[in-house]
Image 1 (cartoon, rainbow, N blue to C red):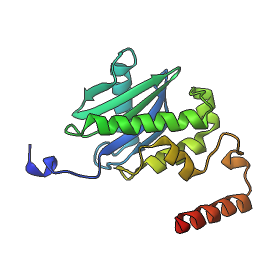
Image 2: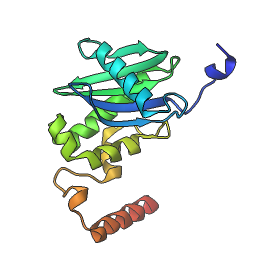
Image 3: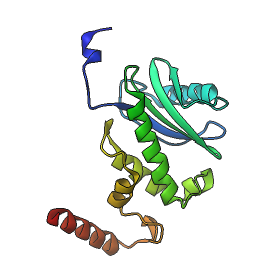
Length: 178
């Protein structure tokens, strides 16, 4: 192993994805373009992970030189992928933040149908937790505050442009005043 691969890096997450109970992709983001550059390679990787983990009762797996932490809920499988030397606790904190944030958005109904109905919120959550493979946030309450997504508010698809702009102005104002 070369010394460059052992140096600390902020780019801890290689990929994050959610599969249904048949192993089909519902949401995915790959942050390392050299890891699996084509859609076919990504699908093969996801299928291999799903086949290894869908009947297992663990929280961590090692496959194809990657460290993978995962969680299952009803008919969804949540995965966070890191490099082989990555700290599993860091990856697990990302996974827990993703799961807890989505649980709040989906009103504790973390299942396929609810996720598909609220996909825009799921992508916002992923983008607030990770940016380009760098972990930005691991606290679900902070993530929910940043995406300004409350269970009693309208979904983003039902908000007008004026409402979204007003919400953004208020967030900027409060972030400046802090």
